[in-house]
Length: 250
Image 1 (cartoon, one colour):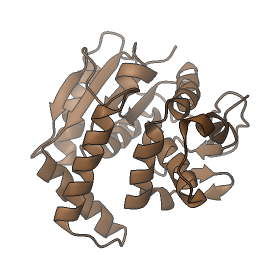
Image 2 (image 1 turned 180 degrees about the vertical axis):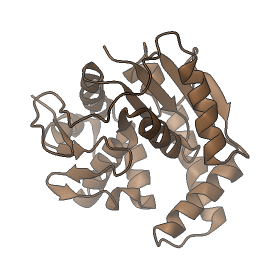
Image 3 (image 1 turned 180 degrees about the horizontal axis):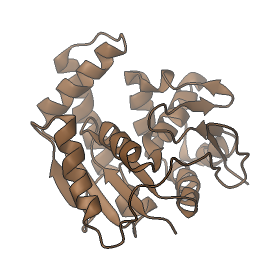
């Protein structure tokens, strides 16, 4: 089993930017579990029919996802279509939260994600990595920040993507997302009991990364930086240059 760092926390707490920066510095695999849920959420959204838990298992098994673990250019391909940008819209984010509440979806994605641990050290970010996916991870971090700080970050991110929105609208969307994630019956958002909690309110990216790296490097089993990893694949999948493909199995 390889060394695993999990970074959990609510929306716009700085998980993605911090995880990618750490993976880049250490030369480790980067795992964005939220991208998997966003991809399934996008697919469900395009169906224009609400996805029920009874349908969810077959829905996930029939989906093919390829995710590049390169922190400098993570790409996600859904059923043969590059949806890297499409999954970053507010609508896809809301849809991701809805499919994430379906136990059958979570079980399938957890299976894909756990398989990656056998291959190389990784830095993963999500909402239940330290509590459910990798409960025995060597280092567990939980990033948080106050609601206004997170809303401001998300608004800047949306504007950089060319999406116009208002602060109050973004703030309300994050508040609703927080409530849904924390109250769902299956794998609710919470810090693992053995996680180190980092409040990133008022922190820039460099301070966030350094604070997280200090915790990681202090672990007695820390293996140090390694050469950049090659592509890997989830079970029942085909490894391809620049990505990993996960397809659920019956």
